[in-house]
Image (cartoon, rainbow over all chains, first blue to last red; front, side):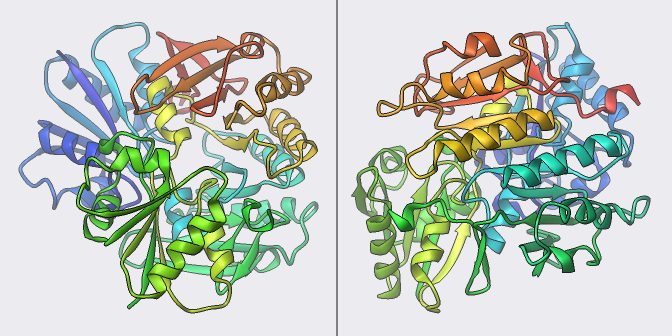
Length: 243
Length: 243
């Protein structure tokens, strides 16, 4: 049977990987991935063959993984966090198209919203929206519309890819949009390098967030109207406490 | 040191638990949880002391866990999926308040949106909103507002707690709200008993979803305008394919 595993390795540290992801990486022949993610797992699976590719080579990487799997190799294509959330799972299905080969198994993982939330306290205790600020593949107008709707919905908002070298001002722009609808004193937080070297969290207001430094290793949380800071933790109540 | 671990055990099957959750459950003295979640882990950790409670006893359960941990026991309070997403993490922080004891470690896990998404294909390839339809602790007006905003934002929508014995019509009502803004032919899906006995997925349109049977073991996905069905999988492209 030819099968491709698309594996979410979690935020970075080996302990936040699932048992299934660990089993698949232990049993496969070849691990395919972006350089940075391969660096996160190589130490734990040193005997594997690795195919490493650079950023923005997503299509090439997925095609290689599909071809190797179709040829009978046991291939794991790795993604950080969850393999479905802004990961390679959707592209793999698009590239396979109507073919039945190889079979595809998506192995879910702990995405940054969950791992960052756990570090910060419990910001995702109630409804939330996950929005990427990368305008590499999505027009800024669409991102802005989603930010406005999320702000009006009063859900907690989690921002992925808040900034990068190529788009240093995305987070500032997003905060400008949000502040039209959310008070600038709203509790927010940044989680950096979650579950990796240099892990760090910071609580700040939406106003402060607007001028905070950010990069692609940050995940940003914007509280809802019920989110509060309790003993230095960011907490969105579910409502159990008041029953 | 007194410490309480709030552990997300993933959707159900042991393999979708993280290595960290497994270590914590292996090392703790006492496991506290809702009956159904305890049944999911008891077989893997048979030597532990268990404190089992029924639904709607959330506050009691968290207080017991905090007290046992403060008294020096190694306590794991378990939640299904992620411990922060509609889980006990926020309530634990609220109940501990300004006290420094016990320390709290939140152990994240694979929430149903991710595990269900993996089964269905890759519906969460782009931005998404997670909304609970339970009006036990949230007024229906607030839920409806979030549904409308999420529909207008054109994000994928994941619905938790789509219905229960006490509220059999919630999913139908929600679909009615969504169909004011989303065409009834929009691809949707239901994932049932994810990673547990009786696991099942179903693809259907928003119109069909409106009269589909649902219960608290279902997670519901409503596609965005770009979500499509490829070879029986629900896929929301990120945009890589068209670069």
